[in-house]
Image (cartoon, rainbow, N blue to C red; front, top):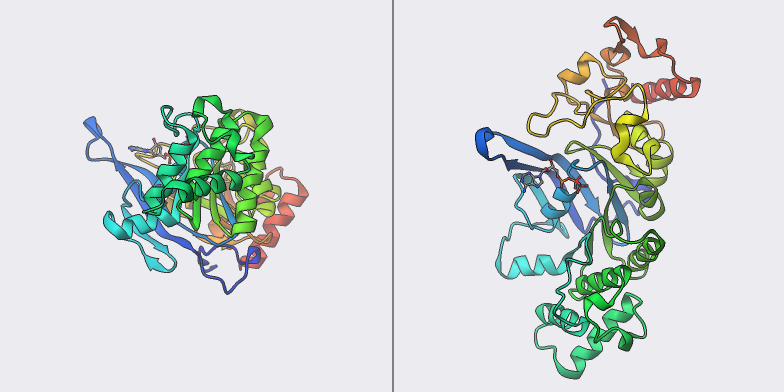
Length: 376
Ligand SMILES: Nc1ncnc2c1ncn2[C@@H]1O[C@H](COP(=O)(O)OP(=O)(O)OP(=O)(O)O)[C@@H](O)[C@H]1O
């Protein structure tokens, strides 16, 4: 039986001897449920590990409710983790307040989805960015503060800065406001940006500009970025590595090009083929059906098995190990192991048949055979 591989970030996308800036190890978040289900919890994220490296973008993709935002909230320490550890520069982070907490939030900044709600409408850009700078660099005032505000505006390409500095948020376009939000995050000189759907509320025509700005920050300033998105195509364009989440778990990860062009996990395949509307999965393919599962009582074993065309009794019984697929990415799926039961599929009428008896394209059969060989 194949041994489970470490869920370390894919090495081909970066220098192998580099250490991550921010590292999440086996993080779990269970939210308590109120009302009559008081004794139950929502399994928002279960056993998620990820590493963010300087000058690299990691994308988290998945349907609505798969736990992506929860990961960002845990990494930004907006909500406490149920279990697991977060390490910044190799040091475990457990400060919940005080100086060490402020040091952490300086280094790990968040960019939110809604540039309309996240900037205070009653203040000018000068005040908003000036306040952010003063919080992180105490004693900065007068001309030096003005220069620092102008520099921030230049870093996010709002130039000439004089045109924007005395404006109120409502006088700016959505894209310009998102640039101000990014400038505010940069005021802390962060090593990590957690960007939760930073372009999804923006007009399609200006989305690329914001992604290119974030790309520049990655390339020129070496900032590590976690990019949360529904949009697989933008993950391919922007992210070095892509992690796919399903019902609170990471089910596939690897170089973005491989994950998005040669998906290994049946769910990723579905997600990629349903683009640009990943929430329309149900209508997509005859063989995959059903709703995303409840996170209060998630399915046993593999959480995708209730919608998976290849699900077996083994998938219901045990959580699949994470193994390496022939195409290089890491995948949590029994199909990629040499477990004998993973060969058996329950047909429409309840009869047992092997995956090789199913009507699959030859290339899919070859891929599965190749994967089994590699992992045996
Ligand atoms: N404070 C909370 N209390 C209870 N449940 C929560 C809380 N926050 C999130 N959840 C639940 O956790 C699960 C994961 O939510 P999360 O927002 O992380 O998903 P997501 O993938 O980011 O979705 P979206 O793309 O819609 O933002 C959902 O079932 C959600 O309802």
